Length: 220
Image 1 (cartoon, rainbow, N blue to C red):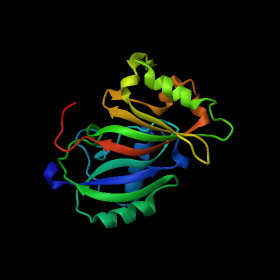
Image 2 (cartoon, rainbow, N blue to C red):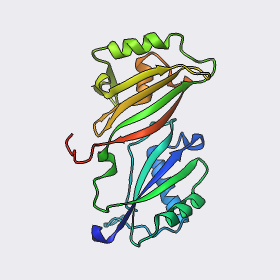
Image 3 (tube, one colour):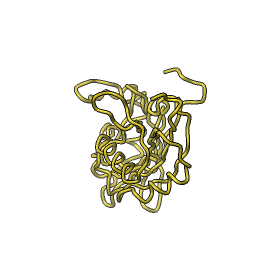
């Protein structure tokens, strides 16, 4: 089907606590069921096993929540964005909160290629707060390299940490992190905590923002 004949919509949604252990591929299947339940006229890929034409924002680490997830879907019939939003809100399962729908050009760049960084808020369960977070943050930022291994591949976490700050509050200390989120160069908040000697199981990790490539910049 000609891309110009399709209608592309960008759906903004929150992944809440009820589905925080739903992985990226399972979340894609959840969205397929939700879109079918909403009776959305999905466009499908060609080939022996046609799939709904969808693109999700970069994968959220398992166990994390988010208020800024995105998914692009292609439809074979035009719809009003407000009508699509209402249909999806009615069809969404518990833990999936649909916040907004916007039309985008059908031939716009792939969603995953447009996101260059993610911002996270990391808080700690009561009684599990690390003893000296200020020292741990300072040591991490002062490190010239932070060798890590993921799927038997070695990499350096340090250049993927774009910002890291510590904030005090009535509910305890909070880390604010901005991590690179590019294909082949993605910083994970759980690995950030591990590099500080902190067990990610004692923390609540919440993605608060996706940062897009500046308009007109297609490098990298």
